[in-house]
Image (tube, rainbow over all chains, first blue to last red; front, top):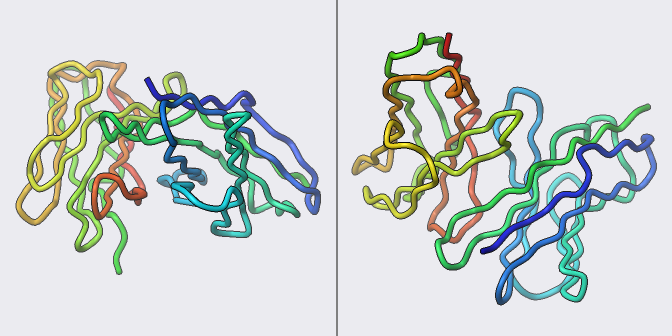
Length: 113
Length: 112
């Protein structure tokens, strides 16, 4: 079965510093991977996806993610964090057998001034 | 383009009652998925509809059901509500089932 893991419940970073939110996956074959963000009392917003091609994927709001096949990781990154980036971040993988989108448990990012 | 809309946004029910939640996808999107989000269980997949047919179903009891109409709007129904059904119910739409999903703001259901 396909799955994703987000090993950190919370990540704290100072404004202006680079941030990384970790995600590892377990899939058979080539993965379809996604990152979503959820602000308080809101639904999830799509940030970026990896289907194929370049390992570095650029997305919304200055975020990017690096697909690493050897480490089975798809970490979310941003060079300079903003306080407004504080939110709940979800990594997801599409199960190719069922087409279901399977989410990780989420990582709360806190950017402090 | 208008985003995914969900109604109502907030709902309070008592145990044993039933509830119907509505979701209007982005215009042109034919796939609608439903998720339950709780602090303890995270995001749990409920079901997915494409062109009025249920394509996938998660591991929820039969009290949870859904349907999709010809205009792609979808409803989900929960019968015989339990306290544990209190959650944020999210709807997401996509062009096809393999595309990225766009989420609505959710319906927060509280069961007393």
